[in-house]
Picture 1: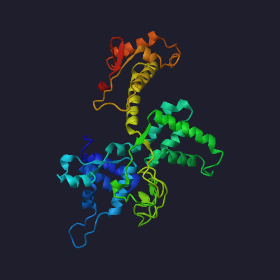
Picture 2 (picture 1 turned 135 degrees about the vertical axis):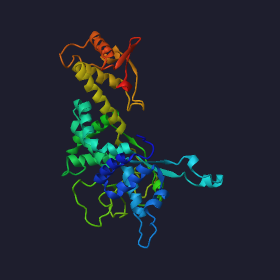
Picture 3 (picture 1 turned 90 degrees about the vertical axis):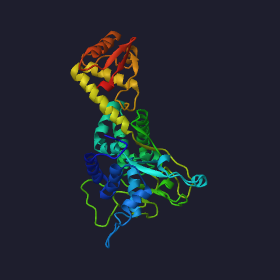
Picture 4 (picture 1 turned 180 degrees about the vertical axis):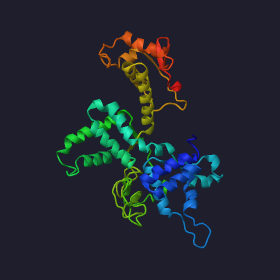
Length: 384
């Protein structure tokens, strides 16, 4: 699949079903245009959706406000990204004019971000499997749920939302929340350390044509409507998109900023860090777990443990395009990460046993995962 150009029809159809279920028809329509036709600038999208077609009763498909709101929703959920249009695609302008004008921005939709949305429950299971021993499973689960629901949030808003979810009847400054807040900070730190969540790029208001001198704070996006909940006629994007402070496009007035970084009402241009779910990290974990289980089925539970530890030694967030991420390690490196005893037979973990398991994996024709080179080993993920 070409991830950088228009996508095939069946990919778009799967994406359409996910987008309609999560955000509604209008947002799905805008995103599918980007998926099927590739990156586009805002004027190009205006020409597609906001200009009436020829005919006596023709009307625009969308208003300019709904188009902009749809892009904001998609960007809030990390589905649409933006960047400056390549110089070769921009018509040559005089130097003086080029210095005055900002770069031309174009928008591109990520099929991966869309197709990953149904896998959110599996991602929560992966975190429990990898970090459950830390004793913060519930806190990490709730933090990730908030990011999956809102797309991207600042640390402050993420903590605030999660505390409300845990204790909806308590005031934000209630003393009972002190211990829970401390545990949430610890869970957030562990998710960041494991790179299950990462910083998101900050989108400047000017990129969407929003007035930089706006005195009221921009509003956060409301989360996707619950499946099965019917919208009232004429509700439009109210349950599925972003509104602006002071009763903007959809009349929803929610304080704070979700997509453009934190900026106080009437304040300067300061921004805060926004966090999001790290999709590539989870995709890598899906692949790693499949490899571990294959080795466990082929050899035994002890070999599965060693492979899991060896995969952790690579420290990779994602595999290379070829599928291989090869990094050398020694028996000592692996033994240092092992528990005192193997899980399947309770035998002590020794240097010799670790070496024997690695040699077996080197020789097994179905599970040729490692090879030796001057006393070092390398996992051949590309061959798998």
